[in-house]
Length: 178
Image (cartoon, rainbow, N blue to C red; front, side, top):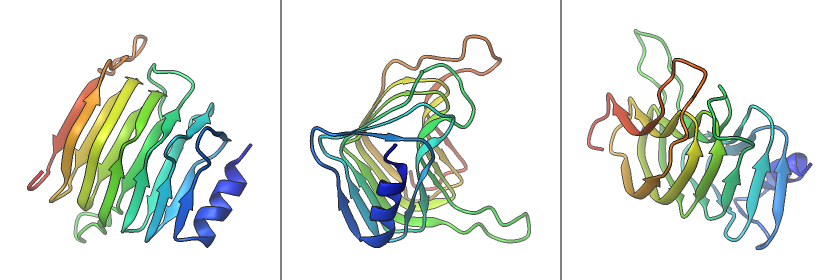
């Protein structure tokens, strides 16, 4: 289990590079602090639990390269690839957005929930991302602004056979300038 080693590296360094050809197994979500670059070019990050592989805890984050591989592409709540979600502060207070981040050159395979969630964000770019066997949403933008997706493929979306959920490729809701 490489979870603790990866988390310690990303907490202590502004740039973390995986070793090309390596496969890293994680058992809990890796939280990426603000102003970090995680370069997984040539690596695979694999997990079997109902977790998100990576979640953002701040702005100015780059996730670059590599493959994120979950255990199955059928609907499994809470099992996903990358979660960039700001904070919803309630109906009377504006959300706290995550800003100025990039997800690029990543392959996400066999995740049961969202491939990539971009919720309550500003200026997040998703570039050259391939998603296969995603159980619910490939890419979801929600209540975000100035976000950009280029050369993103979701093929095939596996769906959720025994549930009432429908699999979606790319969805935008309450989004400005996407």
